[in-house]
Image 1: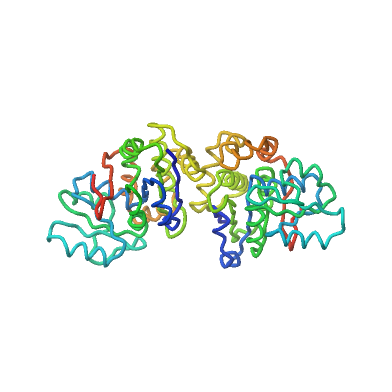
Image 2 (image 1 turned 45 degrees about the horizontal axis):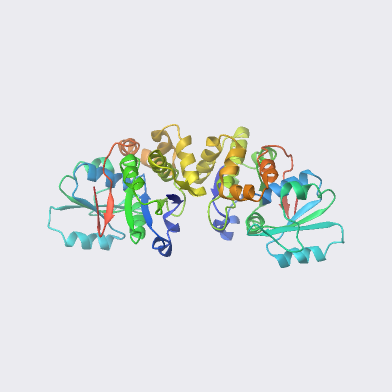
Length: 238
Length: 238
């Protein structure tokens, strides 16, 4: 199996996704894909990623009242009428609900990846659980991991998350890595510990300044969830 | 001083270069910026990077016969009438000559960077020598390192080279690193040794397949050169 990493969601090309057998994973450790794993881990029915505010509201209008939670942020800022998608706070309310989730980078990446053969949401939480599933894919498949990044720039924590997932897959089977995949793996292998790396990243520093220490701590809990987080049709489920 | 890394030459934006005080470094470890350091180390008068074959021939036409060597490759292939720019072979003939150099990634990156306040060619060979100069720049300057990459993809060896340079600058002064700069530094810090990392990269494997082991070995010799490799007007000199 070949493994490649895109270092920003902006680098996703539609034409590339449908060529050959592409298994795509979006990684947005702070916080979208961590939030998705957290909500599914805590019993959410599904998470619907929305690309825009309008799309999120449309999904909400199609569901019975009290069956869903509308959650989201734009450039890390709260949106009126949306719950802020910090994983700790949101997951605590998620049992039995559909979560409609709109975020700047992570759900946008998932949305752009949807034409791949299979699409997953990866984070430090579900790296090992996801790796078991990915390692069982056919030898000729390409694992395309998108480190979502932040507004067109590389995010350290997403490269670390991509590397963590690659490391977990390599524990299951031998793979061929592109230079971008090796770069991500290096970041993971060099990281002293997840909490330290996340706290030193650009977004991590912002979260700490906003007193979101608990969300950062939670996002750092490697292999704490068994939620595989597969995206089929409109929703992501366990 | 802020340090940022662009992970591919395609990400260089002209408008970004002239904003504030940008000190730019192009890193193309295999082989362009290594070749530049090697030629200057061995006594070349200057290296003129050319963006196209036509431009290279124009430079040659303006110089006295026997005063220059025309060197270059396109997509790693030889060009008729050009010496192949492997550093070992080329540098051995470089003393007293002007080297006109055209390469797919490294000289193209240098050419795109030329509107920055200062422009340098960095490699493993001259990391420490270059770091001394860079660390002496004003606090408000931004050090913008471009890991040239390979045809739009990240190159492991260029990220490693960028990280090596950052590590050397950090030994001289405290700097603020962007996530991309931290990613490059992680690759360097994680690398067991330069030769091993270069040999495992995509381009490194190609060079070994072409029996260019000596060039790969030479490109791996960290801090073997004192050539600072500054690009002023049309030429790079020591």
